[in-house]
Amino acid sequence: MVETFRGRCFCKSVSFEIDAPILSCVNCHCESCRRQCSAPMTTYIGVLDGQWRWTGEAPKTFNSSPGVERTFCGNCGTPLSFRSERMSGVMHLYLAAMEEPESFEPTIHVAHEEKLSWMHLGDDLPKKNGPEYL
Image 1 (cartoon, rainbow, N blue to C red):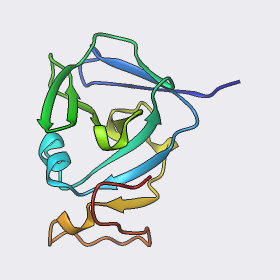
Image 2 (cartoon, rainbow, N blue to C red):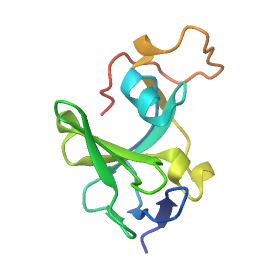
Image 3 (cartoon, one colour):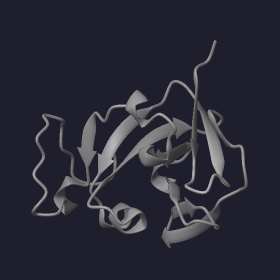
Image 4 (cartoon, rainbow, N blue to C red):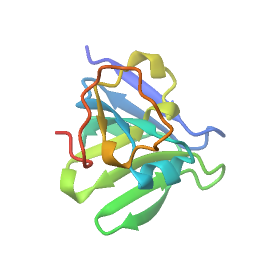
């Protein structure tokens, strides 16, 4: 039996499901993710296409840079995901939108070269420059 995880936006209009297993759980420090989420860093999970689906209203999309599409709720503005042509076939869903975020644990920091100078990390996770992690 496949384990299914659920997520949603703040107002519950946009929702989604993910079928395990996930590819990754990543802390990202890139400026684009920080700006989309209005946070000093964000955490997302990578899921293969075919293992996730929107179950509520479809989110709005925004092409934040060439080859990168980001989604958000058109009602409440909650950031939900990003997709990059460089990592085709994978959707990245923000962990904060998951109903049970404690079910996942990050394994790496990416775009570490863009980390805010005042953020001091107290973990032993690997730190990679650039957004690629697969």
